[in-house]
Amino acid sequence: MKKYLLLMALIYSGCCCLHAQDLENIAHQKPVTFSGTIQAQGIFYNATGIQDRRAPFTYYFSGNPTISFYGLDVPLSFSFSQSDKSFRQPFNQFGISPAYKWVTVHLGYRDISFSPYTLGGHTMLGAGFELTPGKLRVGFMYGRLNRATTIDTTTQALVPFSFSRKGYAAKLGYGTDRNFFELSYLSAKDDTIKPKGVTPQQDYISPARNDVMGYTSRFSFFKYFMFESDGALSLYTNDVNSPISLDNGSSTLLNKLRTTFGLNGTSEYYTAFSAGLGYKSRNYGLKLKYKRVDPDFQTMGAYYFSSDYENWTVSPSANLAKGKIRFNGSLGFQHDNIKDQKRATNHRVIGAFNAGVDITKSLSVDAVYTNFSDNQKAQTVLFADSLKIVQTTQTITIMPRYMIISTDVIHMVSGSFTRNSLNDYNTFYSTDAVSRSIKTNQYMLSYNINFTKRMLSAYVNISDTKLSGQGMSNSFRSATAGANKVFFQKLQTGLSSTFTSSKSLGGEDTFIINATGNLGYRVTNKQLISFNLFLTNNKVKTAGPQLQPNFTETRGELSYLLSF
Image (cartoon, rainbow, N blue to C red; front, side, top):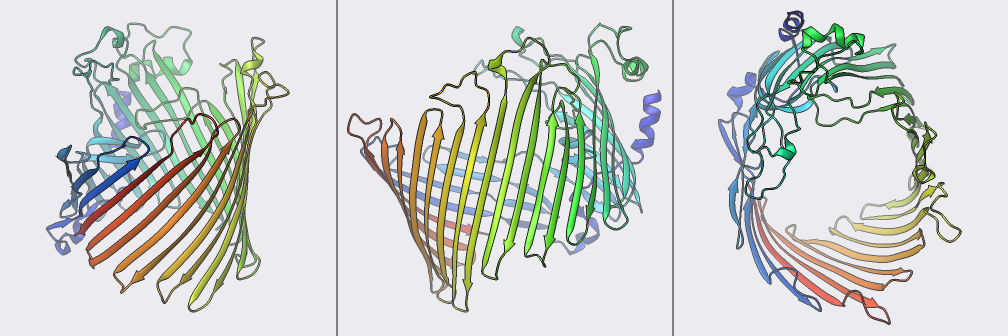
């Protein structure tokens, strides 16, 4: 009875923010609209040197029409080919959220978020409402969270199945978008009847139940400061049919809530909490965040949760010299095993920083640095050196660019240098000859020219990549050149070619040519006829037996696209 008295206060006032059909403007909307695309395509294929990887000719006729009835969208799709014909509704899920002033009603399939830890974006088939009179933020939702699945009898495969799961959620809050405090609650339960077709190997799966109480808050103060926090307590019963009752050794909290929530010996409780304090002015910003999630924390109102970690994050930012100097980044410290239940604790340092400088109106430089460090420490004496993890992954990228802009021509030269390294400090597997560390260096340089009045553009790109580590050494070099031109405002043309060579230690040296040509003619604003031609030529330069043959592939695609 205590539980339902608590819920009644929430049921008469809970809320979620969703895009909805606006009934106030329904008189100005068209009753029925039809939109989408239809495409017809023919593909020609030929290969020499290897076996054909597709049919010499294939055709496709497909479409994605959408019917709208007073703002309610019904997406459909169809496709026809020589091997398959189908007409289907891609998701077979429909929902509507009509709104009038401060009242919104939700019907059908809806993705709702009350808080990250209670109902956090889970798709629910049901009905609900949200009310926002003034600063009051209220709402309620009831429906099915999961549909029961059965074993695939045609393949006899052990396909995972689930129970039919239903539940309700409510939220009560007060405030505006910048300043508010909300309480939310979720109660969900699996059906106690097992699905048909359950095999003895899967009979161990039991119906579960979940009750989650949480809060969400956001506050802004002193113009430049903000505070946000989310938290929840989750009561999870893994088997509602279990005859095992809570014993005296259970936590005091579980014993106090035993009768109200029907807890038993398979029940556990978990907590999750996060908070952040930030400062943001015109030129500077700083945010400090803390987050802690218990091991095995779960809620039936969200699809996935990372658990068993605690982390601190600090995120500074700056915008100086009228935007000519920019900086933002984050530095985080994280560890798992927060309840000392594991034999090892993994400590991580996560850093990411971005900086940009406009040296002149034409010359700019950007830089990116990331660092991810793992350090797993033993909690017991039974800890093998082979399981020890001490790794650091670092990436640094520098990207200069130079632009010359005139009335008729735009020139841009850009480059980048990226160095990525994974350093493994566990010497258990390493020897003097072989190390588990990996390093990658990549250099790129490109030039683009755009003749705006002539509707002509051209580009050249070159790159060089070297990968080394763990007794291997690979290198890749490529060059790309291409151009695009529009004739008569309707005919679009393009050509491009890429030449790539690769060399590997103890492997094959290859040279690959990829060429592409395309033509597109826009008959009207809603009709486009196009032809694309693709060529791939692969050559292997190896004195001995080749692991792969030399081959050439060509593919042509002729298509017609209609938008409506």
